[in-house]
Length: 99
Ligand SMILES: Cc1cc2nc3c(=O)[nH]c(=O)nc-3n(C[C@H](O)[C@H](O)[C@H](O)COP(=O)(O)OP(=O)(O)OC[C@H]3O[C@@H](n4cnc5c(N)ncnc54)[C@H](O)[C@@H]3O)c2cc1C
Image (cartoon, rainbow, N blue to C red; front, side):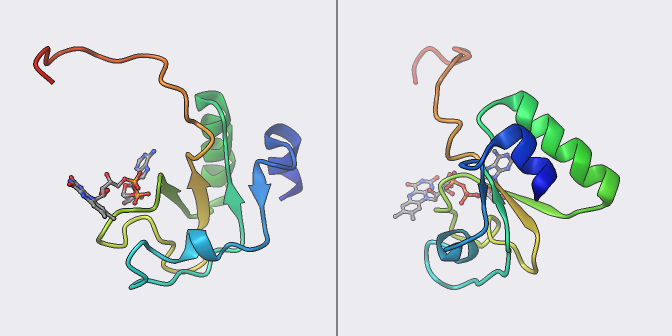
């Protein structure tokens, strides 16, 4: 936890009131994560993954948590990596011009 705070700051590491992150949108699946990380940049995501890989810590990525099949809910006590602070559109790949 201490390690993550060094580069994510206080706001980037949540350990309390995690119900939103542990239950899916339909309320069908319940997880038991005790920590939610909220990176702002891809570099921070990379730092998180490097550390978790080294320590064999399981993670689950979570966007808006509106998926309907429970994929974003930690089944056990995985670390939730929430992309909620990565809310800037920096690039749009315009392959399909008729979107
Ligand atoms: C009311 C309602 C209406 C909906 N209508 C539609 C619709 O019309 N069409 C449609 O297609 N879908 C619809 N959906 C489904 C839902 O919105 C989609 O599944 C949505 O794309 C989920 O995005 P999310 O960011 O909330 O992902 P989450 O629910 O957070 O995650 C979904 C999956 O993606 C993974 N994931 C999340 N973020 C990342 C990431 N950054 N990197 C890698 N993996 C990641 C998660 O681990 C999980 O497995 C609807 C859902 C609701 C609740």
